[in-house]
Image (cartoon, rainbow, N blue to C red):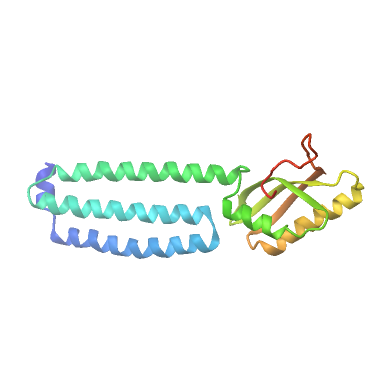
Length: 198
């Protein structure tokens, strides 16, 4: 029976489970560090997998310990808890990966960096919209900007090119920048509407 199996588990099995916890702690810390440095969602998912292995190994250790003490019911209980943790992690990874694949409003920090980088671009009147998504460990940024409606197409292109080059120069993770420009949208009072970099 399950109770007999757990009660007869060798002490070595408990030590193996505890050693696994220690090894996975080190792997988790290292992998999360790599994830933060590279910004890779794939490496982040791997780090989360290592973290789940910590819970699994710890649950095995708890189950073995209490099973040897004559409490076999603890093993399926901690197993169920670990299953819930793994399910939650899977949902989080799916949500983050989906956001990375689609254009999304960037974080406040990234928006601030973009606005600061573009603050002195000559001819740029307004940044109306900022979108970004992941491309491996890098970023693809899409902007809609407002320029003076009296400018020629060539002059508008020059401003858009200056915006693109500035972001590629200033943002380490930026690998592509797409810029769409049009005459600045203004309200009835002639004042430009408030936008991300207004």
